[in-house]
Image (tube, rainbow, N blue to C red; front, side, top):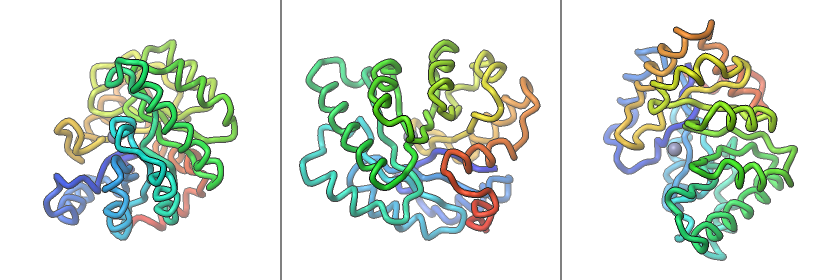
Length: 242
Ligand SMILES: [Zn+2]
């Protein structure tokens, strides 16, 4: 089983290799670790050395205010070795005023341009901004996208599915039987988002377990979908895991 979205470069981890070993003993073999702020990019490169860890590099919309003209050049320099761009996106709950929304949108656009240049799929954070984010992506029909921690309505899910997106459910979707029943098995991913909001790497297991009560879902579905999203053959994903 792969954890398709977490933050292994977070400074909150103590003894990460031991945490990963503990997760392996529970059947979790791989992690897509996503960047958050500018400081995380270097640490992301370090965690990419750990067995079973792939990384995405990007600037999260919560840190849009910390972006400056140099940050996109710096991000571009941090991309070698990354398999995706992210996490990036729009969070209009955190940006109630027009100016901060513009700031987030500007940063997102710069990252979409980079993703196109580097041929990378994009890991998206989307809170109360589904229409705006879908609109921004219209100019990039070739980009693979996943919406992480999806908590939108079925209606919004359908819009994303029409766009070709993969939808990843995390611990906050445990009560969302509607999504677990209706999302198509060839587009779903599962994540812990650890250590965000106090979640643990093992939380991905509870989400998968809950989901399997609603659909004939296998761990293989998540791995196959992750590979299609990343554009890498499934045998290569296996090779990156221990
Ligand atoms: Zn996250």
